[in-house]
Image (tube, rainbow, N blue to C red; front, side):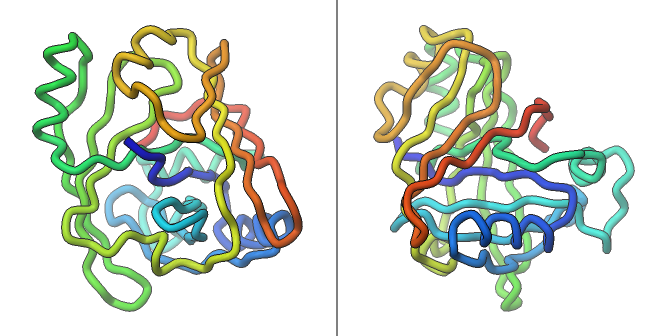
Length: 209
């Protein structure tokens, strides 16, 4: 298993892009909207197979009772969650069930990229495991890290959790991952053109999607 991407949340996309550029020296590129979720994003590569997603409300969509609406009410920005790449989520779901780990249903998600290209991927969420990421399978898509602005590399991800035992049962050893005691959002260390930086967590816990 590998870290697929980090989710950095903010209430306004353009402001978020500027904030990350000021911190890292690299300008994330607008990527597209998530229809029905009320969100849109911009991406920045963190290596060959990892990237940073700046996620914000989409003003062209309704923000009533959805994730975009929750983001619109944020008074700050910061890291909210992260994803693990995995090929074959149906198989993984069965394996986790055998380990008595509860998951949601596999969700197929689509959007059109900024270049007009259709993208389709699958998601799997774990229930009742503090600090847990979600799983993503990009299916036949080119990984976004390959097409996003480059210059930064993820050096480490610190994730607080109150259930190390279950965490290790699900994820085992993931390169660059450090577990810590607590119940908070993750913190990332990134090598950038401006040196090594720390991307701080969002203080508020929000349900992802």
